[in-house]
Image (tube, rainbow, N blue to C red; front, side):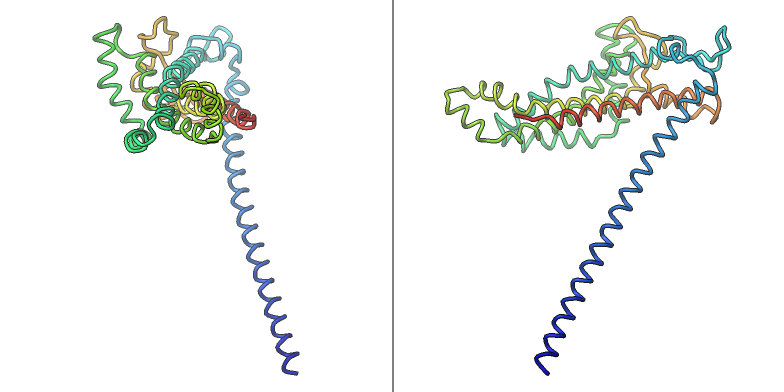
Length: 312
């Protein structure tokens, strides 16, 4: 009887243990799915809200879609000959793409060169000196970059180049400095992910160190480096305060890089606090926000497409 009672006790304890484990696992799944559901609901709600507000410019205020993307006159308080609001967002769209692509063109070689130096040439110096600098640049607020650009870059352009100093050139310099740590850190991760066996095989076949870096390392890490560039462009496209402080915020298409211009984000930050919800001016700003949201989605889709490709 004692042996049977002991076995029965062991079986009962095992059953209780397995039941407790299953209950813990069930609670964990419920909490995880609840968190995921909340995140999805928030994201979808934001997308629907911004889309409904942005599209009301065309459905409620009867703005012309073609005129919105091709027009150059931005004055939501006035109407044109057909009675539609004067909403020409082309200057801001051109300004946003101009500063984004120019900053990416300037920043990409610097970021890739710094990443190669940190990983392939002098890893110790890169870890001790460059890594803290990158982390410091990441942590600096946007307003500090904008204030430095306003105090240093704008006067330098005005005194040594031409114009008032405000314009796409000043915005490009500020954005280049801002997105440099993002591009460099992601490029470093991409290069470090290249297997050491590929480097050893290249060197064993007689290639020099520079040939190995160019022909093997950078080509293998190409997808990761492209992802870093796209991430940097996404941050540059959505930057608001720093660009607003140095670009001049003029809603005209500039004929020079040194003339005042504007971006989608600069017009948003300047006008959102001065409009009334539901009015034409406010709906027009929500349309600009919708464009920014769609561009962010496009950047994310490009990154995911690049991430699914085979690296080698």
